Length: 289
Image (cartoon, rainbow, N blue to C red; front, side, top):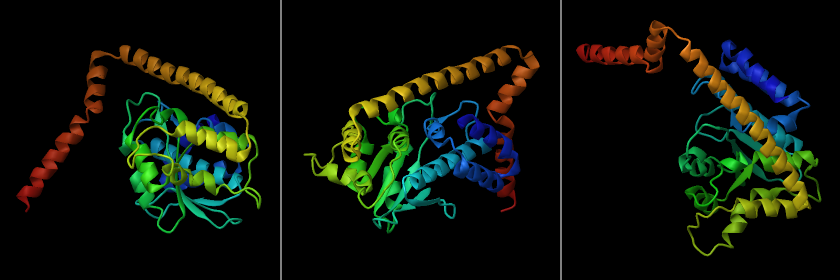
């Protein structure tokens, strides 16, 4: 279950990134609750501090979840760990011969408006190297709803903008690639869609068109997709209550601080001591130059 994965992230973080990652990948590779995790992995919990060890492990876990999902779809897949300037996931179809690179995205519900840099479409395209396709997986409701540069970039560079909800639909119905079912058109959608748009730089949202294509290509009904979306909305509502409760508890804790404790926490939050140390170190470096 998702909560088990979250607990494991907090439990293993003190072990260090590499051993913690190994434990998490092992859990994700063997869990019977992949669908539940896929439906929740797109939301970073507020209880995970920004830029913390836990946040890095959560991100790596999302990569492992995406890779496991590809394997469930009948592809060979693994998480790339060697380099920082590369995609996070590699997959290959042993039936139809194509390869792809992929990047998993998760966002906090408290995150303000996102821009094209948050999705790294151009970078992902460059990371494909000799692979046939590049795939970005993000929460469906985090994709911009009207216009964004990411759509023009995806069209220009043929990057598929799939969502965790789309993958949940495939998992729910046991979709597996076979001689008669090739998933390549799903990864190649942006290239085919580019032939339909009039403008060379079309930044309009095409996610609804992509969803409809997936439905038709795999023989689903609109009700099949609506069921997944409605279930996801309920999950998001539940998670929203949990995340709000976390901050309400944080507020209550802060209000209970003594004056001295409040000042100490504020100094820590602003990282004043670290900034002073950095300035002093810089000055010492000048003196020793």
